[in-house]
Length: 533
Image (cartoon, rainbow, N blue to C red):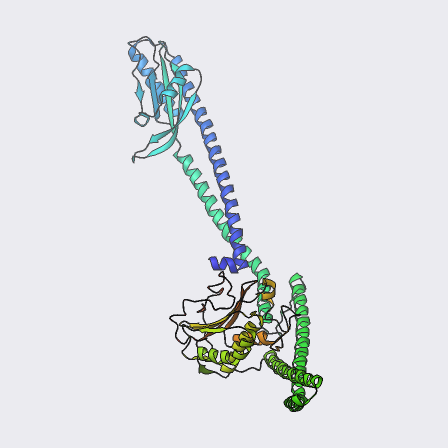
């Protein structure tokens, strides 16, 4: 139900309509039931009062028509009066009580009472009759039934006067079971009619909403297919109404998007081909220039100082140009989607050791000391060692370039599903805005800063592509004045996945002091196998 409520407009509309309709039906049914019940009761009360008035009037006429004063005559008159009351009122529930406060009379008849009125007539009703003997008084009561239950009823009371002057309270009871049954029938009819109305209304709403929701559903499914790359799908166009206009507009938009995407794809292919072709075409003259430059570089000591310096600059820039061409070719392969991994089991710790050895001279020149801390990560992991070694060398070069001559810690660890490597430097660090752009192509945090390694500005972008190609991640933590920490996380199995990296980010020493010229101690220093500096 909850899933249908969230995902189906048709279901939600029908439920809301039925809910509001149910509230309306309940309110109207309750109002009608109360109104009909009150009207039936009022009508029945009026009828009962009229019947009672006629009955007591007829009985009083009988009593007034006789002048008997003896006991036998009075008893006979009272019996005739009771019979007339029962006949005129059509009720056998009759009670008569001598009004209190009168002088005792030997001729006065005894009180009488129908068994069903025993204990039903209240003292309040009798007090009202005694206080106003010329008026009729009534009260709603519960009358006992033969099966031990109760039935709704009304008792009407008034006074009559016997020929010898005695006054009697006469009470006539009326059973309202028939009125209650009529009210119950009306209520059942209202409930059944309301339910039938709800079902009919729900069916109508379902059909109407389906007519409107189906085109919307088709539009949503078509949009999902377009988003998935199926640019040929379109919405069927039927009729000339608003939905048909919507389908026409949607299809026109899809045609425009398809055309623009095709143009952009063609342009992208042209750009990729241009970069690839240019890179390839430049390799031949670059190789010639590099060979000629190497010859001049080897003989630079025989040249005058100015020419020797020129030869050194030519050699350095030629090497940088060659690296740039290689990076451009690699980026063009990623853009074209033609990169293939050469997977083989490799140890990330051993790969890190080789990379550290490769940059040891450069780190020494910059005054940075590198330490490898490896609690784990020795077992072979499925990876492309050439690409991962390039990632690690790039991270190390970046740390040396921006580490301000402070120590650098390389940490390798693993868990059951992944292996990770972090490169932590204690240089100037970066702001959050700079950290968000660090993987952009050709971006530099400080363009005025002199590069000593000769990077191309594509290293971190290629490193991120390499990590993602392995199904891994390359994350960065950096704070101004605290340094930076890059974390490479790879799944143990090619095509596998992981949820938690073996190494934390931010690093454990994120809030600690920045070392000046000595490496900070770590908990792993005394226990980690394969540690080296």
